[in-house]
Length: 147
Image (cartoon, rainbow, N blue to C red; front, side):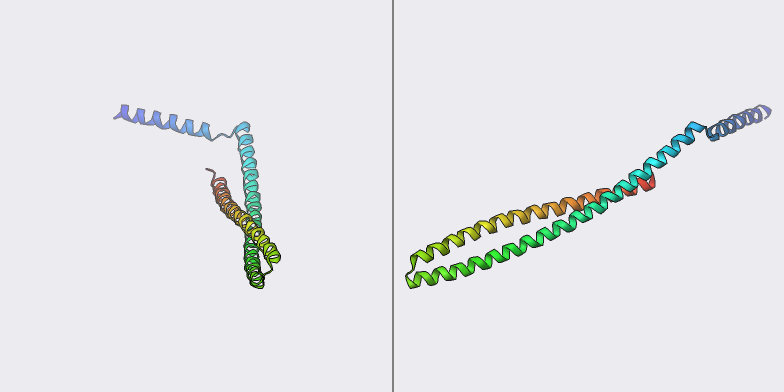
């Protein structure tokens, strides 16, 4: 019994001594902790700044997308108007004006094609910005929780 008590007492003294030694904050540990804290705050502020800029980009991409949609609708109206005028010119026998209307129609078709390409790119940009916002928010969460 004495032997077990002596061993238990020795383990307790060694364990408490090691714990007490580990609790002593050396100046270099304190300095490193403060440095890490400053860096974490910088990271957090940088991530917040990224989220704000991504939101601005997202809003700009939405404006671009809506403008492209309006351009497509306008070009489609122009095509319909030019077709009506071309058909009226052909009925009247005015082939020169009909040719000019056909050129306008072809030009509007090219405009629609480029607007659709722009619209697709704007959609891709919106998806990319949403993904960036999601990743930045995840980074903010990691910085706050110290992971």
